[in-house]
Image 1 (cartoon, rainbow, N blue to C red):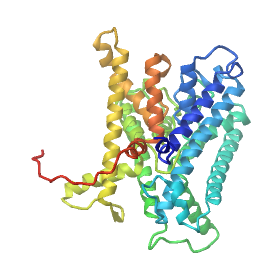
Image 2: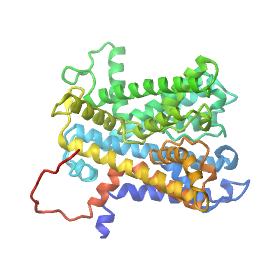
Image 3: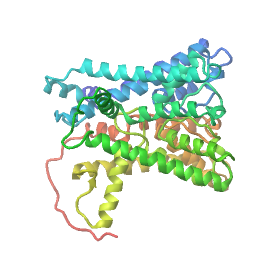
Image 4: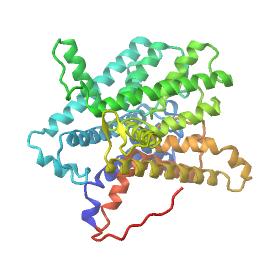
Length: 454
């Protein structure tokens, strides 16, 4: 039993749980919140939201916490974003080199099979890239608005944006800069970079470097980028453009967006990007139209890309599901995604991930609605169903956007959101694999038969 709990499957669970425990303990100190007390549950909620790079808050970060408390939160979401990014990127890197991963999670045992692989050098490159991008982002924010973004505030928001954490020192997030093109672009670029993942960023940087130096770019067969990077970039671009277009039209028709078309276009583009698990907002989410909220929930559910700071089922899973739908309409046996077809095992993984994530969101929404309607008319829960679903998807997919519900949650509801954030950060497939590691292998097969379907 002890060996199973300490297996590589469960190590991320204990590491994230330990970071949350330490963070909650520090946030409970009087030096973290000199203005008033904070309950243990609120401290755990804030620490979980930071480590899981979600961004949902029950108290205002900028006014409630002291400089020390803000530093604790900053360190927590830097560790949370960087920790998950380095580990998942490492898995992608080893899989790309055809290194045996066992069950593709026991990385520590698999590293020994690749003598050419240098773990310290690889992780050093990841950390170096992340810190460099965050430093450039902070410098740009400070230069564009030295009053709104002091050096400390610029660093805080730059790290929060790249890690897709969504924590802001301002109670209205970034709404005061909704028409500032430069500030919006810096945040969108940082969010996108953090959502693409180091694996893709490294390939793109290598390609750009080769072009600038006049060298011949490294090729993957007849292509400049790997299959994975190509799918991630194309899918991400499609989701951002489609999301911005839908939000722009929906807010214009409903009359809930900015009156100026150029400002509405900028806010629509920003919200489309930030729905990819970043959590910042330049408009009041609670005042947006239902059409926009529904489409934003879809974007949040998809999330970012593998090997990144983002949550959700990931862009590659969405592309695989879309490829499956197209294959069914075309009557083809193979599911083609770009220049390759997916294996049956990959499709099984995608469907398992989608079904488990859907079930967790559905159960979470029903539970949150049920908790809110205790002692009240069922009509109250009906009116809040979409708001509750938005909150649940935001928590599970580690987005951090809210229509304003978070601060009014009671103890049981906050506890449920904490669990959703934790499971969403690790990923439902990870926890499923951890549970599978406890099961004994089945050494027999039962007879198969066809069942009438449809």
